[in-house]
Length: 259
Image (cartoon, rainbow, N blue to C red):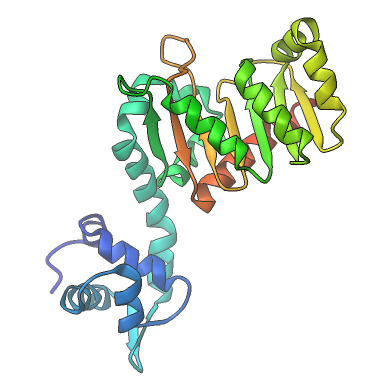
């Protein structure tokens, strides 16, 4: 019973999309789908019948699988759905910040942040974001970053990790390097005494400062008025989110010089 078009079918039900996404890894039984998605048998059966009707999945020998059409639809629809979710869930962040600060190719991939969270300081905890970042750094097995600002506490925490043997790779703006050479030369020398520390100098602005570890992406950007936001950040742990962050670091690294 086709009482809606295909786009409406997917847009109106997260469960339908989640079924297709789970089937992307291979055929699944009804019980495997039910356990993974955490839904009741009746609700799942209804959604499966709808997907079968649109030829997005097949049902053979008590297993369900994506059709070629279903795979094509999934691969083209999910980026759109994820992008919409980013602006829906994190809308208050993007309304206040200059999304144009993010390089164009990464704006096009913004949907990869759809599982990330918007974290900000509040009246009950004015240092919430800083404490979270320091905890992320302390627990990291490896650290990469982009920096256009200098913060004593964050730098000291990263230095301690570098001294402990944690691999650290930073892309710094020329202004940050100049500040370290002029005002914090001793700290800079301590970094260079660590063979596991590497940095690169970017000649220009980096308006998406971030810290990327083996498990977390933590980043912010500038307000629309051009000032940097020190009190709110985007934090994510999903593999797609981490890849977005890794690729952004590599983007600036490729345009920087080894110091």
